[in-house]
Length: 315
Image 1 (cartoon, rainbow, N blue to C red):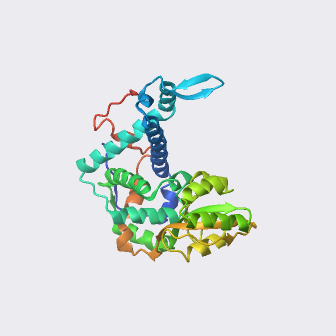
Image 2 (cartoon, helix red, strand yellow):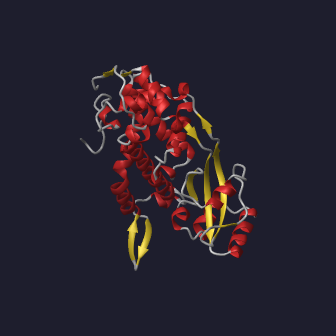
Image 3 (tube, rainbow, N blue to C red):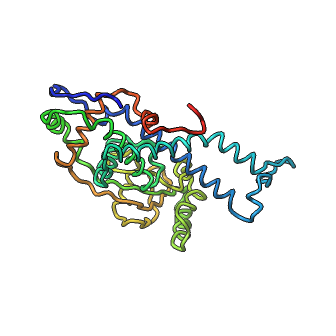
């Protein structure tokens, strides 16, 4: 394991953790990318296994182009080529972090996960890849990252005065606005919006309709998911205003957007705004400052040797 360092003197200048911890952010992003790749692989695998028994045959034809066939074996080999290594790496890293948590008696609470999620959203640290994850999957990735950070920093000492000083200088970072996670369907006319709303009221799935009917291509490809929104987000004010009136899973009436199109929004999740006192964020601050004392190369792979990892792809 890495040798531990002690920090006993308070610094005179403090940079917000949202900027100081940028070098750890790619780790969480990588975990998210691997997770998304795994989901894609898993869905395709289930699809391949579905249907009659013949689908399990490697020579089963899954597609044909001008009489030239593509077999299931060719298809699966191509998926393994593009997603196999990343998928296996994600699975190994997840197991490694679980082992590390047990080995070093690391515990991650739901409150800690919720705090990290709130801070990520409010500080705009959550990139588009992370926003594509569902709530459960996103929290799992945050938990893995917290385990990694806790293991690396568990023996680093930060002076209490430095922690207090940082909080006093950056208290505004811990005033979290109300946050909404939402889905959106955008259409060109009010009549189209009314038609979409009618289908939704008759039981159509919001995500399916978003993919079929929404003209906003990015969110449409994600089933209408537009991620986490606050009053500080770069989003049409009409969307935010509509969300403020909705209960969880409720769907809005058509709203006129500033570009002249119409939107229908669904509230997926609401996180009430709050201010976190020093006592609740002390460990977060300590961990962030301690991470600054470590190497910029921080990944779960650094524990592979410790936990005797071997895998299909060799070194």
